[in-house]
Length: 222
Image: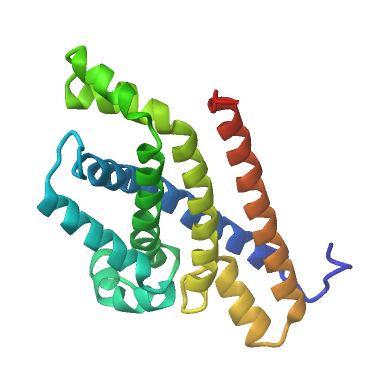
């Protein structure tokens, strides 16, 4: 590989790849938890939901829609003061995490809500008729029934997060995006840009393949 791409510093490339994977994994975990909670609350407080509450549902929907609609680059800039307070810096892979999570969680929450809305209402009503409380219905009915959609949604969201990490890299967020921009674009080293792009594509393809495998194993509908 050194002979094929002599202008690539492989130690830097390896470090950048680790940073990208670190940002993706941490953001994925936080996004899954927050997005699942937000999606459940959005579904439960909606019309005919188990916790129907118009005000709460409207507030949640507005919150999710606002953060889903803000372009990620702008979101990073808007969150710089917040990021500096909680992380202590606006540079590096840790500094990119707040924007990655806040940008991805609302997106995933909507996908969770869509998956929950596909559940047959008769199944929910049957559980209620048998005396199951809301918490039991969530754990025993809603999540299991929507699990294929939940997993499919987190696969799509994780791929989006990888793309977000590349964008975060252009303003010092670290990772492959930062390396491609600083060492590739700024210094005119096309080899670095090419290799960083290929690695990102490999990561994306790997996520998609793994996500599809798990979704097919869990989906019993066909």
